[in-house]
Amino acid sequence: MARLLVLLAAFLACLHAASFLDSGPIDDDFIVYRYARSLIEGDGLVYNTGERFEGFTVPLWLFWIAGGLRLGLDPVAVSQTTSILGAGLAVLLIGLAWARRFPGSTLPAPAWIVAVTPAFAFHGAAGLGTTLLAALLCTWLVLYEAAERRGRTAWGAGLALALACLLRQECALFAVPFLVFEARRGRSVAALPAFVVLVGWTAFRLVYFGRLLPTTYDVKKLPLLVDLAYGARYLGVATITTGVGLYALGATSVLHPRVGARSALFAALTGALAHLAYVVYVGGDFVLFARFFVPVLPIFVYLACVGLRTLLPRALAVGALVVALAAPQWTQLDLASESRAYTRASHDFNEKRWIALGHLFQDELAQETTLALSPIGAIGWYSRLRVIDILGLTNASAIGIEPNLESTRMKGHHRSNASFVLDALPDVVLLGNGVRDPATGRPSVSAWERELVMHPRFQNGYIQMMLPVPEGDPVDVFVRKGTQPPRNAVPR
Image (cartoon, rainbow, N blue to C red):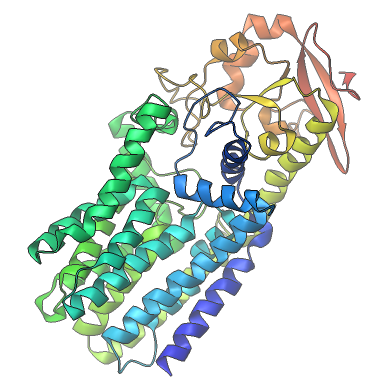
């Protein structure tokens, strides 16, 4: 019966994730698609041909998407199918871990809690390998526990963690305690694959991109105290929408002697808490639904439930689990900005608009056109044009630039370099994410684009034109004087 309920929870997790299909993928996923396409077309790991900048942080996800492209598959379908299955696999694994630890339990509580959490389900459609990473970390923990019970070397766990480290390098925060605790068992060799991956990718980055850290570090890193303030707020909002802070607190209960936890649970707790602290340190993220905490959410839930089941009287434990099952549904309310309605509206307003503009620019602009803009994902993917990223994710514009902390509160949007953008001589500039200010009818200008707009070279060198968009509002573009405008554009 318990295993059947685990399977049902995994199936529910997949259905729940699929219910968010019309809310994703997010624009950053399309950036990965473009890198993947460049790779299989022989241009290398680049966004623009000949420009080596690591504007991605998910190498394994990129390679997976590239494999799908090589087979002729739609990257959106590959991304969302993999993410949905990743959500289901993560739930399945923690459910099986629970069933093995408590064979008399009829309700696999951690599996059901994660399965009904909307934030976790949302990332099953958003892409970027978020739920796949959760599944890999759960695989590591389950195989680690199994090897520990049998007194064997945790080779399978080590390989799963190596894949997790290739997906996102901050999984080193799990590799270190894994090494330490396995060294105590005399089996530290199991952690070797993870460190081979970490060292290998870092060496490759240094040789290929010429940098020790990805370009995203320069774009997003702020002064320490500023980032800590951002990170604390991010943790607070994430706790409201996912319960991660409470689950992390509950997870520490496995340290109690009555729980009888061994190396696997201690390593998982250490890694997950270190990951939580790291997310706070870097200031969190701007993507909805606690993206940086979702990969460790199943582990925190599992550990909290293990401690709860062991330490509390049965009646209190059941009551607490019922509350835990119901609490994630609070985020369905339209009172929260991260509600289901908001994610759909946001996707319609942003990604669907950018997809339409990407197709439009491919049709309207000559292939040699250079386009400067901020939302470089879907527009860059579908247009195939050379893109100058105003925010500096895929170029050197953000390197050494002081953040403008007054311009915006959106993480990763504090740096822009107008001189760099204009020096690149973009033929067309798109401002304000391609939408108009509804109050004035004029092109919107994002906070980080104001310096560009006010620059004399922009004001004197570009003319505003309007371009019709099929089945959508017209888009305003700024065309450099003396260059070929879009075919159907008219002066505005």
